[in-house]
Length: 426
Image 1 (cartoon, rainbow, N blue to C red):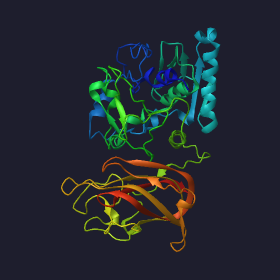
Image 2: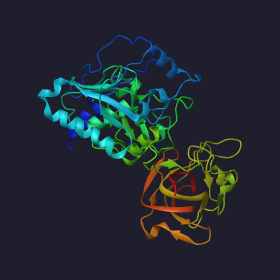
Image 3: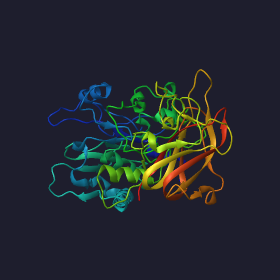
């Protein structure tokens, strides 16, 4: 994939975040394919328009109707396309651009392959989208009850991945970097962001968002690249692992992107298997967490991803002895497919922070006979490089089990962990 294509996908696509109630007058401003300058291109992803009502909601921490979620997906069902059906027309301006027309149909086909969502040729529907030959790549987000809701596919946009990106906006997706927990995965550099585009790095509050239990995915089709909306060619967003880590991808939906789409549109015939299994939200109870040992106030029930220190504990499990062979065991309650593990260390500004840098795990169906995952993946799993960042490992080999026993093998200072497991019911 050529680098310029990647720029066209994320830096040269225009997303218009404009949600209005019926009868609300849209604010005056540039058309959806308004030009913006970035890296010599005439387009810029994130030229987001906010009407006053929505702006107030996003800034409110108490609005009971605030229903906008962090994994770049609208939660409120009124912004979902009814029945998962999106009527569309391709404007006659594409008659002179047959390649672009072909790529639009190819992108639609990619969505059809992996979900129950259907884009259908418009007949008499009042609300539909229109693919237009604008000056960039752009879309409104979600179902807005508009006639001819525009999706611009302009110069440089005729790639399947680019157009799928825009279709996901149509279906209700924002960008991954709006997640409330994004600071555990990425670092944003606001001083490098073009003036007027700072809102592209807003985070939404927990009373406004939910994320379907998905891990933060650095390579999502909806994750902005490192120099998105930059005013000086410097990175505006980087992985906490370092500036060399690639963010986003220009080609295709990931398995998690697909799972999120099918969850949003309740595609029951499409199996999804990416969601957290209950450490963060308490479905895995304290009694289901045990360990070989622990230090005071660092009990196994403290080993929950993103948990902070409280009066009940220090916000992490720490082994009572820093020696190989220590473990923490998680009873999932029933058989689950395990597809990924996320970990953090322990934040301790007083005594010094600690984290596990490398670990393996065993799994069991009955808590008696245990299988060593190293049999299939001998190198083990990479842990953390600091106390706060989340390290997500997608398992190269998916397993099914009820019991998971995590065994740290290398650590910094003390053997401390916070954990979430990802997968689905068997």
